Image 1 (cartoon, rainbow, N blue to C red):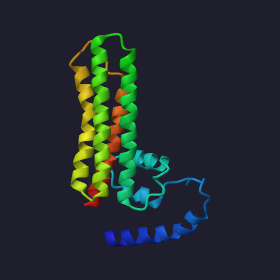
Image 2 (tube, rainbow, N blue to C red):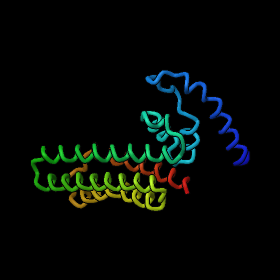
Image 3 (cartoon, rainbow, N blue to C red):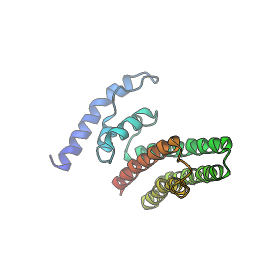
Image 4 (tube, one colour):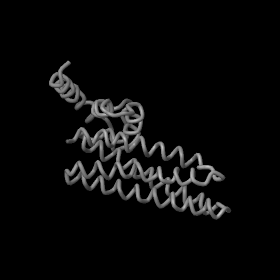
Length: 185
């Protein structure tokens, strides 16, 4: 199927959903991902993760285009970074080993830097400066890896599994955001 045929099919499918969208009460959430989420996530590296993530965020199903979906993904990544910074700070407060405490404080700071880069990415998207948005999201995906590398340099310390899990989630959210930004131009 040609790209024009796919676009027309998507357009007509979208039109057929208009009555369903307006007939729902505001509190009702769609039981399946919207065609926009499905088609956009199909162009990402992690389709299932993308669909599940965007479908779970209240702003996802109401997004009107790829640009707004990319902002949803970036905002989800920023929330992940903020929460992970809090987790790292909490672990640092509980740590009795000074080296561990210092590493965890560094990790917390890296996640704050990631969050700040993601906020800059949203601003760049709003200004239609997609190249800058791409750079900011790329940086945000890399900041947390510094934390993992620092832990490797101190073999007696174990990288907390909670941070590893959250780092992976942030990397995946950033990757789907980057894939979406690439669609924008």
